[in-house]
Structure formats: structure tokens, C-alpha cells
Amino acid sequence: MFSKDAALVVVNISDEIGKITKVSNNMPNVLGYSSHTLIGMSINGLIPLTIREIHDDIVKNFINNFSSEVMRKKPSV
Image 1 (cartoon, rainbow, N blue to C red):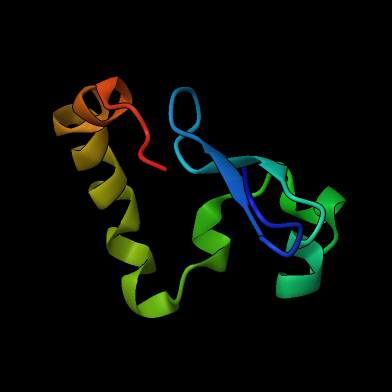
Image 2: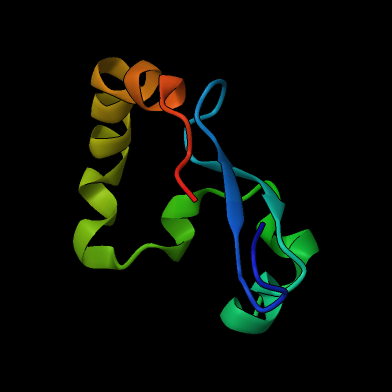
């Protein structure tokens, strides 16, 4: 589905909002952190300081208002 060069992060939005639960094999090459370091940390640690403070509110707004709508859509190829 994705290129072998893709760098992906899977983030939990159910229990602990913004907790990184999985990373692609290439993500450590992109960010310079090991997979072990990335898994379990907050996505906010990877977000620029200028928006970090409002990021949780943005995610909560998405969950409360749009997430079920997005999850019902079929991905386009």
C-alpha cells in the first residue's frame, strides 16, 4: 500500500490521545529517534513548539466532531 521509503507513525486516539503506538521501519531514519524511543511517547514531542500547546485541542475536536465520519469513508486509491 505504501512505498518502502514511506515513514509512518500510528497514533492512538482512544485511550491516551496522541500516544505513538507503532512506527514504520523507515521512521527512525527520518526523525533520528529509534523505534523503541518513539513508541510510547506523545506525538506532541514531534510537533513544533508553536503549535504543540493547541495540538491536543485540535485532536479532541477532531475526535468529537469528525472521526466517526472519516472512519466510515472508504479510502480512495
